[in-house]
Length: 311
Image (cartoon, rainbow, N blue to C red):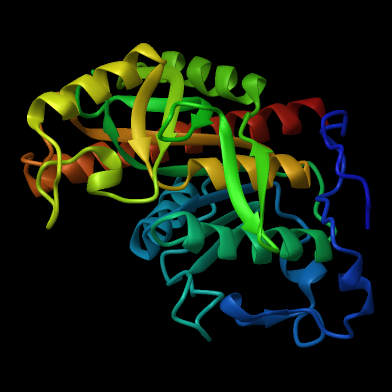
């Protein structure tokens, strides 16, 4: 276990780091919300070959992704149902094919934070190395047309500052929310090669709420005007914000602490400057949600192909 909190200079080949000396005294580290444990499961045998982890809010979407990437990597089994590894719990869903792990994280910072604690420990206990983790999801665009994919440069809070704040033992702890710039540029290049949909790199605003926290006018409560909303969103756009969601800040902070190479890839389902509700048809929204999957699977295929060619 690496006791150092400085992962800035950690090489890409470094193992997944945890920063908790108390774990050494545990006879069995129970990953409760995954229904897994270090004594009850052989984690290195189950997960030791993982190189790519994709996480997203919906359990259905993450199963859909593993089916899609299995077909893209030509690893699909027509008879396989891709069982949920976390079937012993109803909190999260997890699927695996080859070196790719697909995990749901629910909605909002608390839900993804719980999942990430256990995922990081799982990767650490499994002795995984060279792991790239990517959040794929949906978001509201700020000045972007629906269907645009945003690769996050920095996650910012509701005041447009690149930080994640958390109360620990009654004290505010502030953590950095930078993401891997090289990975973001690689994903942008992959999108150019695909040439199927517009992709941009920009800041993502992470909020604690879907309604008032994102300046919507259609929640159960609203104490501001349309003019107030527009002024706020325009300020966000001027600060480099391209989209809004609810998980990227803690995702960026925790991945940075653990030394994971990380990216956030979200499609915009609407332009928030033009409205608050999603009026596109179910079929159109489903097509939009495929964009991050297509981009990330292309990236994974490209890297695996390059590895084979090197060997």
